[in-house]
Length: 276
Image (cartoon, rainbow, N blue to C red; front, side, top):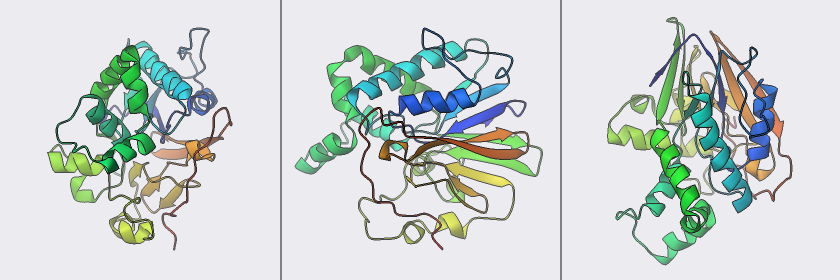
C-alpha cells in the first residue's frame, strides 16, 4: 500500500506487549493519552501518522498483552475516524497467533508445535480464555497490511515490512512474497550461524541511495543500519529499548525509549546484524 507523502510517519519497531514503553515513545512524538487512554489529536501532531511494524503480541505478561491489544484496538478506531492516522503491519507473531486461534488445519499438532506455542506464542492461551480480547485481535489482524511504501519525489522512498527479504519480493502481492515479507529464515533453527551469513541478501543488496528498506523482526541491542537497510527492532521486551524511525518529507530521524521494568523482561542472546 502506498502511503500519502504529505504526512509525517512515526514507524515503531516490535512492541511485543511493551505497552508502557509504547505510550512513552508516542508521548515523545507528541501523542499523549487522555483519561480514557485515547491518543489526543492536537496541533502538534495533526499531520503525523503512526505505523506499528508488526509483532505487537507475544512474549510479554498476560496483563501487558491485554493492555496492548486493547490500547491498539481503541486507538486504531479513534485515530482513523477522519483520516487514517494509524497503520498496522503484519508480523510473524500476529500471523501465527491468528493461525492458532482460528484452528488452521495446516498446523500439524506435535509435541514440538505444542511446546513452541507455549514458548513463543503465549498470546494464544490468553486469547483462547478471553473471547472478547480474541475478537479485538481478530479485527486488528484483518486491518494489518504486509507492506507499506512511502515515496517522496524520485530520489527518496521507504519500504516498510516486518521482516527483511530480498528485493524481488518487496511490495509484491503474490503469496510467496507476502510470506517472505512477514518472516525470514529462523534464527532459532540456525542458532550458531551469524545473521550476516544466514541472511546475506540484506547487506549484499544494500545500496548507497535513499531508497530505504526498514524492517524489524531481528531483535538487536540497538538500531542497525547498513547503507539503505535499517532494522529498528531494538529488543524492548528483552530489556533494551523500543525504537522508531520518523519519516518527514525526504529525511529520516530516530528516537527510542528504554524498557521501564513494569513487567519481567525476556531473555535473549543477540546475533548481531551488520557485524562487519
